[in-house]
Length: 159
Image (cartoon, rainbow, N blue to C red; front, side):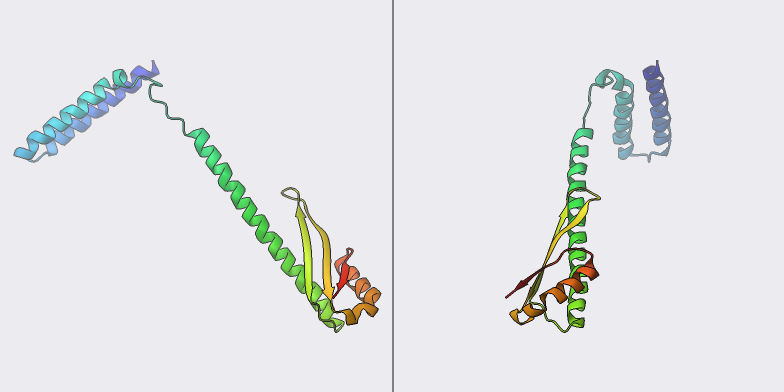
């Protein structure tokens, strides 16, 4: 019953649009072409239930669009996680560098391993700091001060 109502409404609307269009048409050769066009349009509206049975043309884009949006969301999350990891590493490196400079020590490199298992699970696995061999005698002092500042175990490696 709904289908018949929709068809009747579209036929009435098409008739009203066609009538208004015919009143507005300019006289002359263009009027003939537009009259034919309007007639074809009205016939298409009348015959649409026969040509387009309900469900006859069913284009399923939902699955495709959903898959594409999920892929894009995953790529976005990977990018955000990578940026967050880089920012965290830079902040940790800055803190360690400042602590070492306060002690009068120049490092040769800092390696930070960050593990992200899930969306909210971010863990610093380990921090390795490369120092010149001349600071090896101060190993316990350096390690204690850095571990107190960072709140985790730090590994010192000497070159």
